[in-house]
Image (tube, rainbow, N blue to C red; front, side):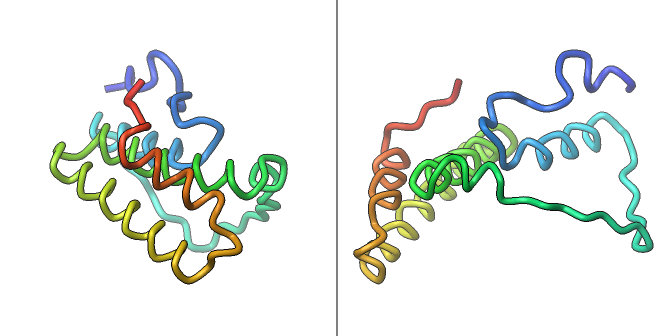
Length: 119
């Protein structure tokens, strides 16, 4: 089916980044497209710009919110809520062991506990 991308190539709900590419590939496969691996291909990715521009807290929140968004969009609801629970547990452990860096972890845990919605 060639109309897999009839609207947008990337789902802009995965804002500002992270998981939009995984979502796109999954939609291609579900539409019957083939994905090929070319091990001889080389790319130079000079990444980290979005994360640096956003700051640590915003990056952590966006990354994990998009992780949950992907699971919610493509998995059974129970699986999506298991991902959400694992994010809460992961943030709690990070807060315990990195109390000086906990600002983004608290905000992410709060979002995962109920502040995140599916748009």
